[in-house]
Length: 278
Image (cartoon, rainbow, N blue to C red; front, side, top):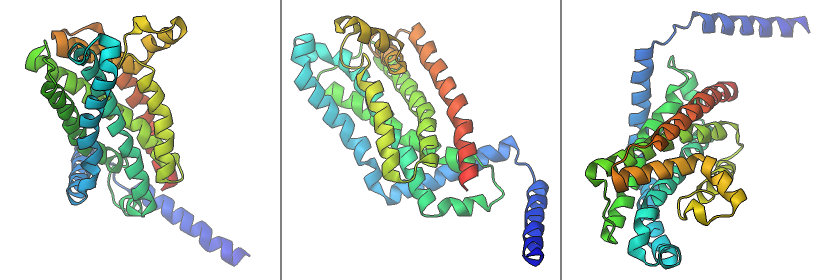
Protein backbone atom coordinates (compact mmCIF):
# COMPACT_ATOMS: atom_id res chain seq x y z
CA UNK A 1 0.00 0.00 0.00
CA UNK A 2 2.82 2.44 0.87
CA UNK A 3 4.44 1.84 -2.53
CA UNK A 4 1.24 3.05 -4.18
CA UNK A 5 0.56 6.04 -1.91
CA UNK A 6 4.09 7.42 -2.04
CA UNK A 7 4.22 8.01 -5.83
CA UNK A 8 0.74 9.56 -5.67
CA UNK A 9 1.83 12.00 -2.95
CA UNK A 10 4.98 12.81 -4.89
CA UNK A 11 2.91 13.53 -8.00
CA UNK A 12 0.66 15.89 -6.03
CA UNK A 13 3.67 17.73 -4.58
CA UNK A 14 5.20 18.01 -8.06
CA UNK A 15 1.97 19.44 -9.45
CA UNK A 16 1.81 21.94 -6.60
CA UNK A 17 5.40 23.04 -7.25
CA UNK A 18 4.68 23.48 -10.95
CA UNK A 19 1.56 25.54 -10.19
CA UNK A 20 3.47 27.68 -7.71
CA UNK A 21 6.27 28.26 -10.18
CA UNK A 22 3.91 29.29 -12.98
CA UNK A 23 4.43 32.93 -13.90
CA UNK A 24 1.54 35.25 -13.09
CA UNK A 25 -0.17 36.67 -16.14
CA UNK A 26 -0.17 40.46 -16.31
CA UNK A 27 -3.20 42.58 -17.16
CA UNK A 28 -1.81 43.41 -20.59
CA UNK A 29 -1.20 39.75 -21.36
CA UNK A 30 -4.70 38.90 -20.16
CA UNK A 31 -6.20 41.42 -22.56
CA UNK A 32 -4.07 40.14 -25.43
CA UNK A 33 -5.01 36.52 -24.70
CA UNK A 34 -8.68 37.46 -24.47
CA UNK A 35 -8.51 39.10 -27.89
CA UNK A 36 -6.78 36.01 -29.27
CA UNK A 37 -9.62 33.84 -27.97
CA UNK A 38 -12.10 36.32 -29.45
CA UNK A 39 -10.42 35.98 -32.84
CA UNK A 40 -10.69 32.20 -32.54
CA UNK A 41 -14.41 32.53 -31.80
CA UNK A 42 -14.88 34.83 -34.81
CA UNK A 43 -13.19 32.31 -37.09
CA UNK A 44 -15.42 29.62 -35.64
CA UNK A 45 -18.49 31.75 -36.44
CA UNK A 46 -17.30 32.25 -40.00
CA UNK A 47 -17.01 28.51 -40.50
CA UNK A 48 -20.40 27.89 -38.85
CA UNK A 49 -22.76 30.48 -40.38
CA UNK A 50 -25.76 28.78 -38.76
CA UNK A 51 -24.75 30.59 -35.56
CA UNK A 52 -26.08 33.77 -37.17
CA UNK A 53 -29.51 32.36 -38.04
CA UNK A 54 -31.10 33.42 -34.75
CA UNK A 55 -29.36 36.79 -34.95
CA UNK A 56 -30.55 37.43 -38.50
CA UNK A 57 -34.06 35.95 -38.40
CA UNK A 58 -35.31 36.66 -34.89
CA UNK A 59 -35.26 40.50 -35.08
CA UNK A 60 -37.09 40.50 -38.41
CA UNK A 61 -39.63 37.85 -37.42
CA UNK A 62 -40.39 39.19 -33.94
CA UNK A 63 -40.64 42.81 -35.08
CA UNK A 64 -43.17 42.00 -37.79
CA UNK A 65 -45.09 39.48 -35.67
CA UNK A 66 -45.48 41.63 -32.54
CA UNK A 67 -46.26 44.77 -34.53
CA UNK A 68 -49.11 43.27 -36.56
CA UNK A 69 -50.51 41.07 -33.77
CA UNK A 70 -50.44 43.56 -30.88
CA UNK A 71 -50.21 46.95 -32.62
CA UNK A 72 -53.92 47.49 -33.02
CA UNK A 73 -54.85 46.14 -29.59
CA UNK A 74 -52.22 48.06 -27.62
CA UNK A 75 -51.82 51.37 -29.51
CA UNK A 76 -54.69 51.46 -32.01
CA UNK A 77 -52.49 50.92 -35.07
CA UNK A 78 -49.10 49.55 -36.03
CA UNK A 79 -47.44 52.92 -36.65
CA UNK A 80 -48.32 54.17 -33.16
CA UNK A 81 -47.08 50.94 -31.57
CA UNK A 82 -43.62 50.97 -33.16
CA UNK A 83 -42.03 53.62 -30.87
CA UNK A 84 -43.16 51.57 -27.87
CA UNK A 85 -42.30 48.17 -29.32
CA UNK A 86 -38.98 48.59 -31.17
CA UNK A 87 -36.91 49.32 -28.02
CA UNK A 88 -38.62 46.33 -26.40
CA UNK A 89 -37.73 44.09 -29.32
CA UNK A 90 -34.18 45.47 -29.14
CA UNK A 91 -33.85 44.38 -25.51
CA UNK A 92 -35.48 41.01 -26.11
CA UNK A 93 -33.34 40.24 -29.17
CA UNK A 94 -29.99 41.13 -27.62
CA UNK A 95 -30.73 39.36 -24.34
CA UNK A 96 -32.01 36.25 -26.11
CA UNK A 97 -28.91 36.23 -28.32
CA UNK A 98 -26.61 36.18 -25.30
CA UNK A 99 -28.12 32.85 -24.18
CA UNK A 100 -26.05 31.14 -26.87
CA UNK A 101 -22.85 32.05 -24.99
CA UNK A 102 -23.40 29.49 -22.26
CA UNK A 103 -24.64 26.82 -24.68
CA UNK A 104 -21.58 27.10 -26.92
CA UNK A 105 -19.30 27.11 -23.89
CA UNK A 106 -20.82 23.88 -22.62
CA UNK A 107 -20.41 22.31 -26.07
CA UNK A 108 -16.72 23.23 -26.16
CA UNK A 109 -16.21 21.81 -22.67
CA UNK A 110 -17.90 18.56 -23.66
CA UNK A 111 -15.64 18.26 -26.71
CA UNK A 112 -12.48 18.68 -24.60
CA UNK A 113 -11.43 21.98 -26.13
CA UNK A 114 -10.97 23.61 -22.73
CA UNK A 115 -8.71 20.76 -21.59
CA UNK A 116 -6.16 22.12 -24.05
CA UNK A 117 -6.65 25.67 -22.80
CA UNK A 118 -6.03 24.60 -19.22
CA UNK A 119 -2.60 23.26 -20.12
CA UNK A 120 -1.55 26.60 -21.60
CA UNK A 121 0.10 29.34 -19.49
CA UNK A 122 -2.73 31.81 -20.10
CA UNK A 123 -5.15 33.74 -17.91
CA UNK A 124 -8.01 31.57 -16.75
CA UNK A 125 -10.56 34.22 -17.72
CA UNK A 126 -9.33 34.47 -21.33
CA UNK A 127 -11.09 31.33 -22.69
CA UNK A 128 -14.32 32.57 -21.09
CA UNK A 129 -14.16 36.26 -21.97
CA UNK A 130 -12.79 35.78 -25.50
CA UNK A 131 -15.95 34.27 -27.02
CA UNK A 132 -18.01 36.90 -25.22
CA UNK A 133 -16.02 39.67 -26.87
CA UNK A 134 -16.63 37.99 -30.23
CA UNK A 135 -20.33 37.82 -29.44
CA UNK A 136 -20.42 41.62 -29.40
CA UNK A 137 -20.60 41.34 -33.18
CA UNK A 138 -23.70 39.16 -32.90
CA UNK A 139 -25.36 41.66 -30.56
CA UNK A 140 -24.56 44.53 -32.91
CA UNK A 141 -26.03 42.69 -35.90
CA UNK A 142 -29.20 41.78 -34.00
CA UNK A 143 -29.69 45.34 -32.74
CA UNK A 144 -29.07 46.87 -36.17
CA UNK A 145 -31.53 44.52 -37.85
CA UNK A 146 -34.17 45.35 -35.23
CA UNK A 147 -34.02 49.06 -35.98
CA UNK A 148 -33.67 48.36 -39.70
CA UNK A 149 -36.87 46.31 -39.72
CA UNK A 150 -38.59 49.03 -37.72
CA UNK A 151 -37.59 51.64 -40.29
CA UNK A 152 -38.95 49.46 -43.09
CA UNK A 153 -42.28 49.23 -41.23
CA UNK A 154 -42.48 53.00 -40.76
CA UNK A 155 -40.71 53.65 -37.46
CA UNK A 156 -39.05 57.07 -37.33
CA UNK A 157 -36.99 57.45 -34.12
CA UNK A 158 -37.23 60.99 -32.79
CA UNK A 159 -33.81 60.68 -31.16
CA UNK A 160 -32.06 60.59 -34.52
CA UNK A 161 -28.91 58.65 -35.31
CA UNK A 162 -27.25 59.54 -32.00
CA UNK A 163 -30.17 58.34 -29.94
CA UNK A 164 -30.43 55.07 -31.86
CA UNK A 165 -26.71 54.42 -31.52
CA UNK A 166 -26.92 55.13 -27.80
CA UNK A 167 -29.79 52.65 -27.41
CA UNK A 168 -27.87 50.01 -29.36
CA UNK A 169 -24.70 50.49 -27.29
CA UNK A 170 -26.66 50.27 -24.06
CA UNK A 171 -28.38 47.07 -25.19
CA UNK A 172 -25.05 45.54 -26.24
CA UNK A 173 -23.51 46.41 -22.87
CA UNK A 174 -26.46 44.84 -21.06
CA UNK A 175 -26.32 41.70 -23.19
CA UNK A 176 -22.60 41.31 -22.60
CA UNK A 177 -22.95 41.66 -18.85
CA UNK A 178 -25.86 39.22 -18.66
CA UNK A 179 -23.92 36.75 -20.78
CA UNK A 180 -21.66 36.21 -17.75
CA UNK A 181 -24.66 34.69 -15.96
CA UNK A 182 -25.20 32.27 -18.84
CA UNK A 183 -21.48 31.55 -18.92
CA UNK A 184 -21.70 30.49 -15.28
CA UNK A 185 -24.69 28.31 -16.11
CA UNK A 186 -22.63 26.76 -18.90
CA UNK A 187 -19.91 25.76 -16.42
CA UNK A 188 -22.28 24.10 -13.94
CA UNK A 189 -24.87 22.46 -16.22
CA UNK A 190 -24.45 18.87 -17.39
CA UNK A 191 -25.20 19.40 -21.07
CA UNK A 192 -25.74 22.10 -23.68
CA UNK A 193 -29.46 21.27 -23.75
CA UNK A 194 -29.64 21.85 -19.99
CA UNK A 195 -27.93 25.23 -20.39
CA UNK A 196 -30.46 26.27 -23.00
CA UNK A 197 -33.41 25.16 -20.88
CA UNK A 198 -32.17 26.90 -17.72
CA UNK A 199 -31.35 30.08 -19.65
CA UNK A 200 -34.83 30.23 -21.19
CA UNK A 201 -36.45 29.75 -17.78
CA UNK A 202 -34.44 32.71 -16.46
CA UNK A 203 -34.66 35.09 -19.40
CA UNK A 204 -38.17 34.66 -20.76
CA UNK A 205 -39.98 35.69 -17.53
CA UNK A 206 -37.67 38.68 -17.15
CA UNK A 207 -38.34 39.74 -20.75
CA UNK A 208 -42.08 39.26 -20.94
CA UNK A 209 -42.78 40.42 -17.37
CA UNK A 210 -41.40 43.83 -18.25
CA UNK A 211 -42.58 46.96 -20.04
CA UNK A 212 -41.11 45.76 -23.34
CA UNK A 213 -44.46 45.36 -25.11
CA UNK A 214 -47.08 47.07 -22.93
CA UNK A 215 -47.24 50.14 -20.73
CA UNK A 216 -46.85 49.60 -16.99
CA UNK A 217 -50.03 51.61 -16.31
CA UNK A 218 -52.17 48.91 -17.97
CA UNK A 219 -50.95 46.13 -15.65
CA UNK A 220 -52.42 44.94 -12.33
CA UNK A 221 -50.85 46.58 -9.30
CA UNK A 222 -48.94 43.52 -8.06
CA UNK A 223 -47.50 42.87 -11.52
CA UNK A 224 -46.69 46.53 -12.13
CA UNK A 225 -44.66 46.58 -8.91
CA UNK A 226 -42.45 43.76 -10.21
CA UNK A 227 -42.18 45.26 -13.69
CA UNK A 228 -40.94 48.57 -12.30
CA UNK A 229 -37.99 46.91 -10.51
CA UNK A 230 -37.24 44.47 -13.32
CA UNK A 231 -33.78 45.33 -14.78
CA UNK A 232 -35.10 44.62 -18.28
CA UNK A 233 -37.72 47.35 -17.79
CA UNK A 234 -34.95 49.83 -16.95
CA UNK A 235 -33.14 48.86 -20.15
CA UNK A 236 -36.29 49.20 -22.27
CA UNK A 237 -37.21 52.57 -20.78
CA UNK A 238 -33.67 53.87 -21.24
CA UNK A 239 -33.64 52.65 -24.86
CA UNK A 240 -36.98 54.36 -25.51
CA UNK A 241 -35.74 57.63 -24.05
CA UNK A 242 -32.62 57.50 -26.18
CA UNK A 243 -34.15 56.33 -29.46
CA UNK A 244 -37.39 58.35 -29.33
CA UNK A 245 -36.26 61.52 -27.52
CA UNK A 246 -32.43 61.51 -27.48
CA UNK A 247 -32.85 61.78 -23.71
CA UNK A 248 -30.13 60.52 -21.37
CA UNK A 249 -32.39 59.69 -18.44
CA UNK A 250 -31.69 58.19 -15.04
CA UNK A 251 -32.79 54.82 -16.41
CA UNK A 252 -29.46 54.64 -18.21
CA UNK A 253 -27.65 54.87 -14.90
CA UNK A 254 -29.84 52.17 -13.35
CA UNK A 255 -29.21 49.92 -16.35
CA UNK A 256 -25.44 50.39 -16.18
CA UNK A 257 -25.52 49.75 -12.43
CA UNK A 258 -27.34 46.47 -13.05
CA UNK A 259 -24.69 45.58 -15.66
CA UNK A 260 -21.87 46.20 -13.18
CA UNK A 261 -23.61 44.12 -10.52
CA UNK A 262 -24.11 41.22 -12.94
CA UNK A 263 -20.45 41.28 -13.97
CA UNK A 264 -19.24 41.59 -10.38
CA UNK A 265 -21.28 38.55 -9.34
CA UNK A 266 -21.14 36.17 -12.28
CA UNK A 267 -17.68 36.80 -13.74
CA UNK A 268 -15.88 35.53 -10.59
CA UNK A 269 -18.40 32.68 -10.27
CA UNK A 270 -17.75 31.67 -13.89
CA UNK A 271 -13.97 31.67 -13.49
CA UNK A 272 -14.14 29.76 -10.19
CA UNK A 273 -16.51 27.15 -11.58
CA UNK A 274 -14.43 26.85 -14.74
CA UNK A 275 -11.25 26.23 -12.73
CA UNK A 276 -13.01 23.68 -10.52
CA UNK A 277 -14.41 21.70 -13.43
CA UNK A 278 -11.24 21.78 -15.46
